Length: 91
Image (cartoon, rainbow, N blue to C red; front, side, top):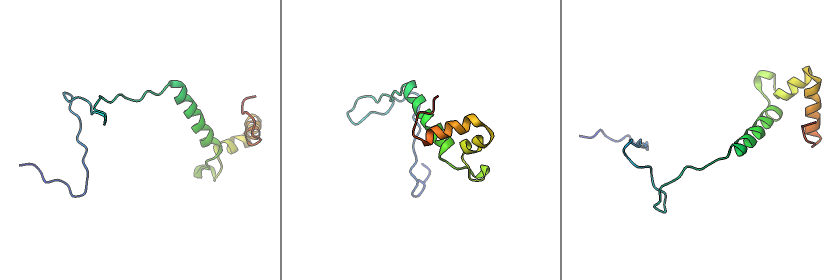
């Protein structure tokens, strides 16, 4: 006898090795989306930029990592000034 289903919990069944991958609505085999390395590196650069310049951290007394670094380093201060002015961060 099968165990009773859990109430209100949707369970996803794992695909076994001998089973084919799931099909798409069109009936053809689904292919994984391909993401280029360039797109990944652009996304990573954007995320790191936002993380370091926009998001205040509790452990840094409400400062962003870039603000804390700017207090200790003149190069970082110049970098932040360029970003706030809307210019390219590269010199």
